[in-house]
Amino acid sequence: MDYILSTSFLVSLLQVIWIDILLSGDNAVVIAMACRSLPAHQRKLGITLGALTAVGLRIVFAFLISELLGVPFLRIVGGLLLFWIALKLIQGEDADSHGNIEASTSLWKAVRTIAIADAVMSLDNVVAIAAASRGHPELFVFGLLLSIPLIMVGATLITKLITRFPFIVWAGAALLGYIAAEMIVTDPIVLGWLSDNYSQFVLPDPGHPPLNVKPAGVVLYGAAAVGALFVVVAGYFVARNAGRGAAKT
Image (cartoon, rainbow, N blue to C red; front, side):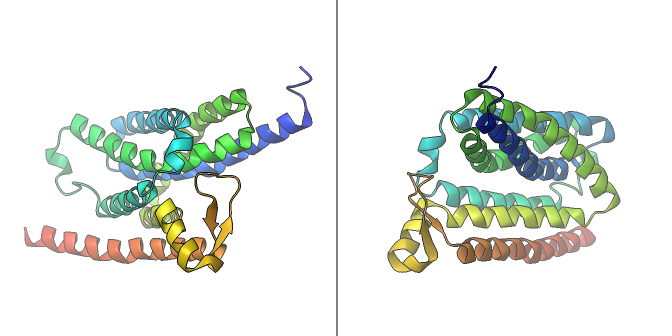
């Protein structure tokens, strides 16, 4: 009992809860954007499946975290996948032919999009929760379980907001671009190149031995801002071209 009520444990518990609240927002945005075109009666099911997928992937990554962090090119590939997903969500995957697709097919397409995006983003989420847990397995499990209702509530709220304010889709896509660029500049290959050629732009990172260094703030946030801007600009042209194609047909 004293262990549970210890100051360090309570501090770690509060940190896990706070990190969950912050990081679950990314997953909620993806789920909401992917489910926004589903029929009303399937939207809740899509959000539930998306939340369970996100947590399931976090559990899988929890067992592989130390190995995955140091795999070269993994974050680059993940970042590029996120860029692709962001642009597809702006375009509205199969939006024009939605009426010709069976509801079950649309649902599983939404879940597939969620699964791909969550597989990319869950890595960093697990790292943050694991760090805040400070070796307490019960806190780590609690953090994973807590993310289920947080993601579901967040996705439901964002879905309603998207229906009322469609521009939120663009904000969500920009967020994915921001995360994608962050992932790319924290890949071991990119960090190694920066360390060899521009050492002033990397800092020691004792918290992540596989990486050893991390990008300086100017690089990390600068790249993230560029990633968000890229998605918005590229998404504008993708959406415009899609609109022209629909008009011609």
